[in-house]
Length: 212
Length: 212
DNA sequence: TTCTTCGTGATACGACCGTATCATGATATT
DNA sequence: AATATCATGATACGGTCGTATCACGAAGAA
Image: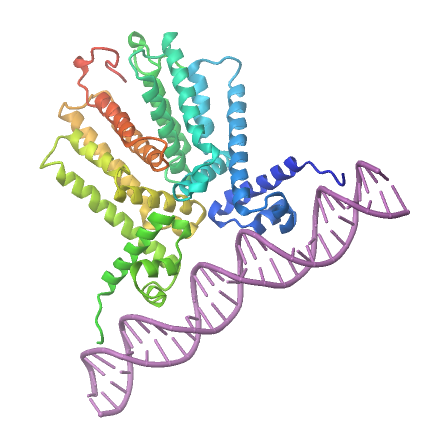
């Protein structure tokens, strides 16, 4: 066969371009031509690898979640080998906060896709529906294990707290995005709740007992 | 003067049409012609009252926040005259949840505008920036007063909890919107935290004692 | 009445968008 | 070397969008 270019890699390059330009100008504002220009290829090429814009957007969403998963994994590894449950949870939540350019793009685009999926049923049927459930389950498991090993308050409702932490992180991420809240204050709120959750009853002299 | 039509009312009618069609098909998908058709008027009329689409969108945002404020007010009044702080807070939070068609539209469009404002600086300069702060301040005040009157745990950090409650409500609202969570479970999570906050110290049979 | 101004309508314009078509290099197989 | 097939490019097409233009009816002011 001819030229043999790795199609999947090409698609990834184009998807990266989509993510870059969408992160800059907003997902609603990107066109095929913008993506092509950002990727440094011709419009035809974008059409060649993704026949339709819808498919490009779907692939972009997939690529986005993949990259986000990789980001979280990297943050977890950076937290050291076998960190405590609290440090793990903190790394998890903080990785979701738009405190750097990459996080900003992730949060903006993920939010955009979510809102879009409300009125676009084709998008609503796409993969990223199960992702939040996975995060919720993972976090719940971490909390339960922390409780079992006596690090976290046994009185708390693990799943409810997991849902709450993720929900707070998401909204405060948006607040950071629109410039309404500083990353520091968002982190402070999260730590406040982690302090509450990771507090064995008797050791609570002041506040922060079982720190990471 | 000629025909004498109340311009402001006309604008409101058109803004209502914008909100309806945007709530149905998504804010990104509405055009001037859609709004005109939904309002039962000609395209020219929409142009006449709002010279540009940008102005129409800005006015629509203003109208949206006005109507949302009215909704919250109505819910508060429906909660009875001088309800307790907890009932007030609950009414406030539940009014923000997309549990009915109106709430669904509010949440969807408010989220859409927020996301849009991240990449649209003209929109970012618009009014609705201060609204979240107002809600946060109001909620903080309610919590502090509840603490002062011995109804709420004096150990909690009022503002931090206010921020948390609003943040959780917002994200769970979106979760409801995309069909990922039921309104009941969202309400259960909120009530869980209200139970924690509105718990006088000695009644805590299990864990949450004199927290920081 | 005549005029001026406001309100409303029908329609046209230029730009851009997603998609399709046609053409042409490049290469691995025969 | 010939050829079939993959990869890439230039360009055209139909539709829709926001906006502008032209036209006309209606009503207080002169």
